[in-house]
Image (cartoon, rainbow, N blue to C red; front, side, top):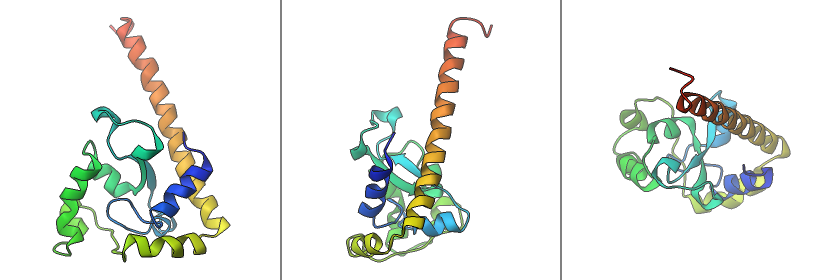
Length: 152
């Protein structure tokens, strides 16, 4: 599990934008959407829980990306990033925002990120991560139960 400082560092490193579609992550949260800590290379495909394999994405990108690697998903999003189509045409979802160059936004995000914004971001991501961890434990127990033949 990432500590709060690491989550904020990830957020700042991404200039406050989804790692894939570049929508504003806090705007997603404040408008009722979700953001998630996401594996760039899915664990199911050999990815690890190391910080270098983690990013923050909007829920839409996380759901559509599924088991694709970050590179595969970015390839999928190329027409969107080229301005040829809207994201909803690629993902069948309806919310997106386009943003300026990632590097230019990093300092601006770092300077304007309030303590309140940090708290909202951390609370949302930590709550989601705790739910995922609880579900993983429950599924692990269920798997053991079934493997031992109790489910038959």
